[in-house]
Length: 579
Image (cartoon, rainbow, N blue to C red; front, side, top):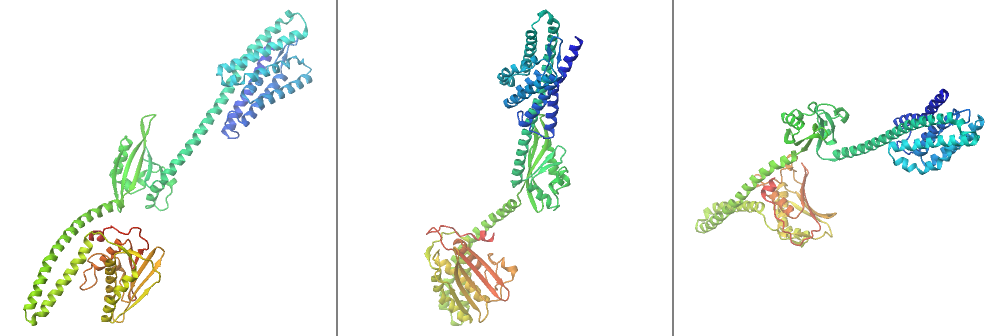
């Protein structure tokens, strides 16, 4: 009996060895990423096979056989475990390998081969219970393996009894040993299944953790990409106001202070040690409130920039605690500038409306004064005629200034029709030649053939050309040359007016189109502003290029095709031109 107990303990250890090695190898391999974490992956199936087969062989090699031929072999446990936990292919290979190996051991040790076939008789029944085993609870699995162990033990005892053809009472001691072996087998089955189930649950847990971690990293990477693409400057702080992460826009703000700073250098540092605006009292106050769970927003002025900042607490819902702060900064410097300019524009608009009304009212009494002066001149001596002439010229000059001013200040509908730019130029040519002859200057026309027709207001275009040409003539001395040219460039027709005058200094070019800015002694400063207004009403552009000592060139670009025949665009007011 003592020998049977000893052999039973040895069989239990050999049977449990398969589960122990499987648990160790899968744990080590999963940590080292040697094989996959999938429960039924090929790597795990291979481990299962090579852990169960040696256990079967060792149980068979060290099996105990009583003097009457009753065997004691728990190799059925690793065989059943390999079949139940493995794939069908693994089950067949394991059963075939175990059968061949056990037969070889039986022949080499001259043991009775009766015990060899008992476990394999149960093989088809095991295959039928694989799905039930894999879906069952832990207790179901233990009871199923234990049932196969008990059946195997009973089959071996029955076959041994029938094979010897002796009195059944002779085997009473061995039957007691069989019952002991069944108890040991049940215990070993419970232990093996517990170890195997624990190993597979660890694999499943690591697989879930790996998948969750992979998904988390993917989502975190997506979130970082979204943060980097956002125009807002974002920075995340922990509960101790240290930087956790920031996007590229925020990093660029830091680089205004330190051009070579990188993100790894920023992470982990206090916010107050990095940016000038972070030391502002409002920032510290808002961050402190956000850590207490209160969201807020404020304006931060960091000359020359202005930021609109939002402070949002990061809450952990599981512990109901604020764990950090998200700061979002939006650069609103341009918006603040536009807001300031809008206020100035509204004030200037009011002044412009008042000025337009006043000048309109002034023109009426001036017309009355001029009419009475003409009557008085007819009745006055001829010696006073030059006085009347000077006064009337000044009144006409003042009236011309008022007309130009009203052309800028008033909004009106522009009537356009399809016409040729060359026709407008040729109509003005006699008038321009007359002015040029009085000044001793010449005019050159370089008009390109086949220039497309445009939708223009001929009256305004004549005024534009006349203003540019007379400005050029006034700037040139004797023998100056005025060149008027046209040509097509893409979808545009370009009109160029060029002179050979002294040129304009670069510091004055930017102010040329401002109303009331002039370099002439008797100029009003409204001529070029009126030209720009006309060009804008025709959806074009006007530019100036000047080189001191070589002359000045004005270039007007007009789009070649305009879809509408009648353009109802309004002329910009004087205040918009000033802006």
